[in-house]
Image (cartoon, rainbow, N blue to C red):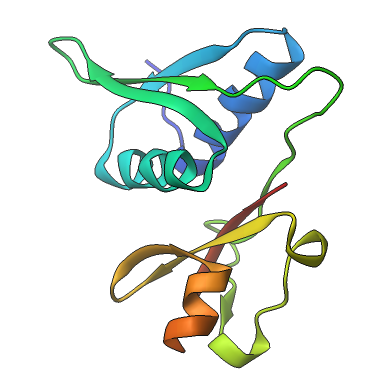
Length: 128
């Protein structure tokens, strides 16, 4: 059995690998934060479908596939180096075309929502 030190980084890598293999979806071990991340990405329009399946819960997701456009996922805060940001210090990703995902005291939110609510937190990843 292998032990994953960065489950969110592993999850993002699974999504990148599925896209590189020209697959429309992938699956990953379930956790509450990954499920919240998927729900947020689905709400933002990056994912088409998210489901929790199986006796031993697994996340199964379907990525929106746009020919010629590559989904870019980048992990910002890592287990060895956590990155925190105040709401006023948050910059837009690709001039507003992308999103940064933050974990705050009110759960996972995008950078736009964090600036609107004036909440800071840990920068998990960017997606564009």
